[in-house]
Image (cartoon, rainbow, N blue to C red):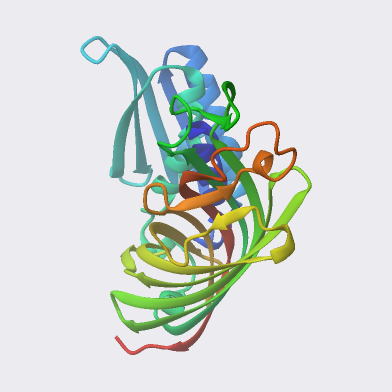
Length: 341
């Protein structure tokens, strides 16, 4: 799961990278040394990223404007391989930026290729990025954002009434016990939000999200989630805005005749972080991760066996769960009305 999230995050950066700089007439050389297997693999990965972003690649370092040089070596202290990479201006051999990290295997190393390239190129001097760019995209009074959402609902059994702490039971026969497992449900959906940036470091976003779920087979439910988030834009990168936030939400589930919850919390609280990258003159592509948690044992689901057939596991009538939601969003935000800084 961690690797899937990691890869998705980096793919997002790659997808929007073309909007970050103007690569026209910039030629790059990529040179590596060290363990040949690692060198060949990482050089190929960096080359693919550079070409996808529109840069010219040459094997002749003297004819390039900038050179990406890296080494791969084994660090006996850390007992891991160490990757050291620098962005060098060929004209005077000055090092613009240099970084290093450790990795355990080739797969882990390749996961970093996209982010490494992004971080290197984001340090190019302004005079090589083309004409001066309008950077007011991150200082708008209002943003309209639309997104594709993909959330995961987790329900962890938390009910002391269960027989042995794990099972439903029959009131007429204590020996009849049916163990019950934790549950989860995938919740794809769409979202729409309005973000008001009333301060340079703070904004408020009312939002509506609609998702679909099938927690129990044959019970397709829709959840409309109306939320309000307080966000804190961090603008230390020119082409990227990072916004941690806290959020409160009010859920409405329908249709009611298929509702399997005896009690569903009226308010949900959580936190998240959104990473937005400039895409176009006044907008940005964004990736959002959030986590919402409901109080322990606060969600109650009907015991279906207490309804039919009643002669099976009819106790307890409802089952209590810890309830949380892990949410992912990817979308675009449109900016309106420049703020004066």
